Image (tube, rainbow, N blue to C red; front, side, top):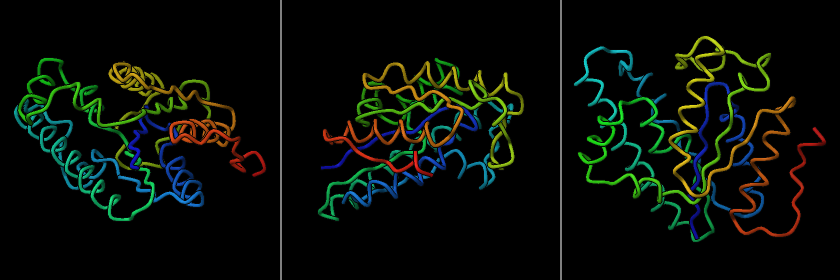
Length: 212
């Protein structure tokens, strides 16, 4: 069985640390865990200019990124099948994230251009975990220093991005909103328990985070 989930959320939401903990925790439970990198970060570091005013270029960057993301997911599904183990594929952002940065009409044209529908993109994932930016609830923790590809600078910008991402993913029937906590370990703990529920793990689990 392969379970695909999305980790999304605004800047400085703790996705990287959470991803690392997911891999460690569920690997110990016998799952083959695959953590797919954020496509936008790869594209930015490779030289794609997301700040361009050239609308055609902007569209093509996002179209190429969507195709890349879909192919990456499908490739890892095949790898997951080959393991012969129950597998968890964790997407650092998913297909719908792109729509939060595009004009609605351009987004619809983009989806059509790759031969998909929005419903098909949403149905690729069993569950979506939106980790709220630390700018909401824990502004003292907000920083730009841990991601060289991050473009948001102010708390207000971070909150706006977070709101936009939450809006586009609200179309998914299984959206988990993970609020910022005073301690990051509590936020991660909430994600681990949510994923366990999605995997059908019904008995109580001990994440061990409360002991750190």
